[in-house]
Length: 272
Image (cartoon, helix red, strand yellow):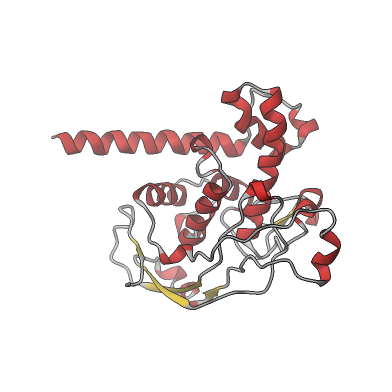
């Protein structure tokens, strides 16, 4: 199978291609099985050479660095040993190397729109293949279509698509989704600062956990968005509101409307 490429209609200039080497990762765990395990050593069965076309010259050099996406590992002795009594063991699914599969049309549209519509970051700073994996992690955790792409909207808002050693709130919030220690600790304190996939897993697991409460307090149409508000702002600050939405969801709703308009325009052109 040939190397997958990211092809988007926004990038029109025929600039030099850039090569990223991205390592495959194992499948994220299902949220229903319990908190994600501690992040273990890098598992890389083989490297993929992915050609990313139309890369602006100013980031061409950055394109040659290796992005190490750490893999989910099984429970081990040591740091994870003390957690065995409190957290359910997570059953690993079969290995999946998501970057071996090119994006579907839906995935391509979501990632591409998020790349070019983040007010906090220019498109050249976006990491399309990490973004692709994040929305696949959302699917693993059963996130509904109304919140499809919420991790990308949160990443845009919280870290402007920065990837390495993201820290905020005076060191209290870490990772691309800016999780606070009390939430990260529920996931077994993985290395959220350097691992975007672990950050997404922990964030989404907490979202599912909070949704169990919001689904009892809020109407079904509001429950998921309320859970995301309580997660991003905290229950007290949000007032446990069932009607308000966070800045993440407000941005995501704007993206969804933009995607719908693009689809309508494309459909109208096809009928001509």
